[in-house]
Every structure is written in structure tokens, then in C-alpha cells.
Length: 150
Image 1 (cartoon, rainbow, N blue to C red):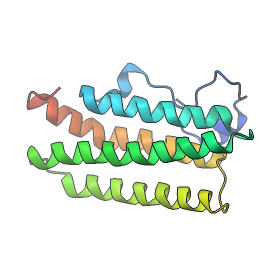
Image 2: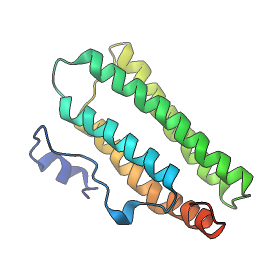
Image 3: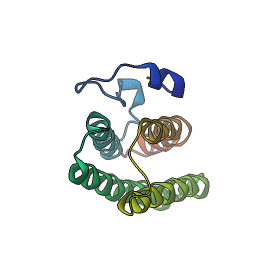
């Protein structure tokens, strides 16, 4: 997994190359959350594969899908955290809120013609995604697993 921005810029791009590749150790031991993570990674990888092309309608559709999936995913995690009284709920939710706002603002600016999907944007999503999994979702997954929710 490349988390260094410079490495991402130096990586040659082909249509089959993935920007976000999940390994077993990236899973958080909750089927629903893992499936949602994989779907979001698929969307980012699709955006990566068409980046720089003239597929504006597809790009716009994928950005909307990403934003919708983030909303559903964050809602899923937050529901689990509230129901199970997860200790780190407020800090975890705060990260969700900040990231969602960032992506929503980007999509708005994109729709206004003020932003473009580029490698820097996609790498920032990737970096946030894996940092969030490592620092927050893994704790939540372990907590849920211990409560018998897999």
C-alpha cells in the first residue's frame, strides 16, 4: 500500500492498476463495514482509472456515488457505535463529519467547474481512508467482534 504522495506520483498508471488495494490485514472483522470499505475503494479505483479522460458524466456519477456511500457507511458505523456504547464514538464521528464535509465541498466545487479529479485528490482520499482504518475502524471492528457482531 502506497501512502506516500511522492510514491503515488511516481507510480505508472494503467487502466488495470488500482490506487487502493485491500489486503487481508486491512479488514476490520465486520462483514458489513468491510464490504462498504471495498465498495468505496472500487469507486476511487474507477475514478483513478478514468482520471484525465473526457468521461465527465461518469466521473460526476462516481463522485455522487462516493458521497452517497460515505454517508451510508458513516451512518452504519455510527449506529453500531451508539447501540454498543463505543467509548470513542465522538472522536470517531468527528472524523467522519470532517471527511464527509471535505468530500461534499469537493463534489460541489466539481459540479461548479471549480475542481477536477486529480491524483492529489484521490491520494488524499486513500491516505485518509487507510489512516482512518488503522486508527479508528480497526478498534471499532475489534470491539464489535468482541461483542459478537461480525
